[in-house]
Image (cartoon, rainbow, N blue to C red; front, side, top):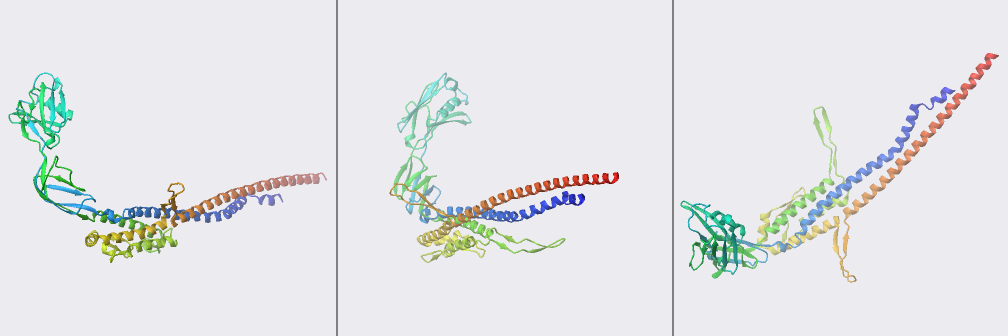
Length: 472
């Protein structure tokens, strides 16, 4: 009897019973964990689609007002000038003739044996006076009383004049040049101390420096009207039109509307659009398994299933976006007429040459078409990712922000709530499992203890019975 009781509680049997209980309790949790994994994959896919649509929306916003991208372009015929124009520049043609470049004044000294030759002894100073009314004094320390030393002192002062040591076959010259061209920057110079041998005046009286090039303003005729400018660069020829003179002679400048900026923006839109459409297609795809031969035989590849397959709203989103382009029309123009075509695979291509041709014929119609197309696509994107707007408040004088949630965010929020709920349920089930296993183990211990006591009692009774039999 003792043997039959103790065998009911063998270690192997106890482990088997506990394992069976754990397996039964784990089964529903495994299903729930698989559901969480599926939901999390959908949440991730939705986030990626939202990101792609946000990038697309950024490209759309730059095209909301196509007319603002219609830049003016300046074209120059001839090599005597370059030009640039902004949106405010008027259209037209402008002839620049008899161009003479602005010059900076240059003077040079007599010949010295070398750059280290002393001009005098001790310290000194140079005083510059400019035709525009300004002046500058440069002190020459005693350690800089050579040709090279004075040149360094002048350049270090940054006083509107630069100095150069000019090497010739007979020696060196000290050359001085105004840093800015134009008549207002012509200068005279007088020296004292170690620099007393350096002087120049326009009258020539007492000058020891020789004039190599006089300062002068740039001059040219604009459509026959004589004009002068102090410099050769950044000349504001007209409102929005800037010219740089590069050489003497003549040049013709033509200013007209350019579609380059609008074309570039449409090219960017095409890229972002295709990124979004491709991602949606990937996340909603279903590709059946394909059989492939291998060295060991044939194997069947797994089907490719996107995490958002079966989500009708997301699947419809791709077609709605493509429809925004294919259905665009204005003033007899279609998207195809401005270079936007859709392939059989749902990819959009942009032909900038076709666009330029359409724009040249009718810029107003092209602008209207682009604007209509952008509005439709923006509506589709807003429905998916939501939008932020403003609602005026006369009571407070403030403008609070009103946020509209798109269906993608709603779906993501719902899935996240489901994940949270299932995870909480799994945690509770795990606690219940642990409690039930612990209780079962306690019951087995108690039963085993009782069995042990019964076995001891039976053994004792048996010994007594055996003892009594002997005495008889």
